[in-house]
Image (cartoon, rainbow, N blue to C red; front, side, top):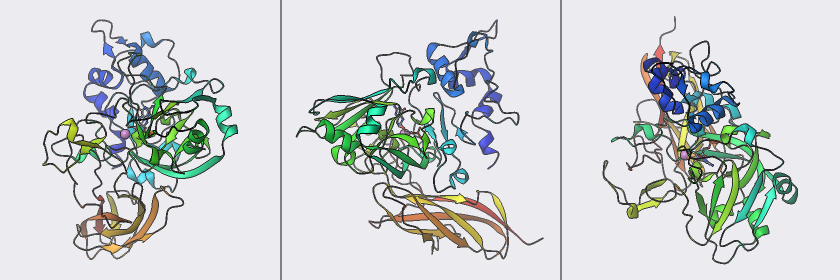
Length: 442
Ligand SMILES: Nc1nc2c(c(=O)[nH]1)N[C@H]1C(S)=C(S)[C@@H](COP(=O)(O)O)O[C@H]1N2
Ligand SMILES: [Mo]
């Protein structure tokens, strides 16, 4: 398992450096000079990951990982992020291995990254000129706020809120679904500080026909075309007006990391994290379901009725994902450890259930034949994940798996295996399992 965190992009570079360059940055290599050609968008992608301009970018060799990212031990790291598994995609997307999600509050350097476009370059972000516009056809009094005005005019709230990508767990679907091949780590629960979206919306006034909000951010489209928007999603009014829906400027008491939306983002917990717009510049109040990019078609939608694996489902039979389903992870111990026979093993993790609460958490050491109830704490606030602890005993030496299964406040359980197949591979809430080798005492 420790090895796995060292793979990702580095492995890709070892296999085929030029292909890796193309996949990660969109960089091609000149066959004669060996210099890499960086298009504007690939240069921006690289700048965003390195966190600085590259004055001599044109001299960089193709097929060579920037030294800042190629650690001496051969692993690949994103500055400011620790031990994340980088998916082989453009732009940069990275998930957290479950054993690094053990903290009650996910540290910023362990919080996953899901970028649909190119984040704004750090030097493009000026806190003194950053503004948030509230407008749209169902807004009574459109207004524009500076960061300072937002902070001064509205009351501040801090909540611990979990964000999970709708595609978390996609890698297990069969037939496979296109998109980031997340395993289990596109989830995090940080402490967010900001103002309530509902307070800001009340200030601007909602017309009676307001039904939805939509967000716009400062990131740019992968194609480099300034007229295209990478993503602009939203939620119905009822979700927008919840107490915990925040316009946030801080994560864990500090500035939000650049990749996670600095300087301002929406935090809409319990729903696909794609609704939590990063690098937030505008919120529109709509008199219809928001129709920004990645709202329509098959994006963040599942078949309204269950379908057989592999079925092609027409757009009109796809429904927008709302609350995420009940789920849990084992964060301790790390999968693959060796454990001494005769000693009970302490196991722990987190559980969450979209808009709902988790009521029970069960553990199995026999592939789901029998289950034992774990100790489960209530959430520190609504929409935060919940800590669970259990002790597992093993009857003899050998290979075991510890499975965790959460049940939500409406009695719905995580499935033991892959739940309903859907074309885009969303909502995989199957039980997380870890491997344990039980050996006799030396
Ligand atoms: N502006 C903007 N907001 C965005 C995205 C994006 O690409 N651009 N990605 C969305 C998706 S799909 C997810 S899962 C979350 C990821 O948040 P994180 O990168 O902070 O983990 O941000 C959402 N908000
Ligand atoms: Mo996502």
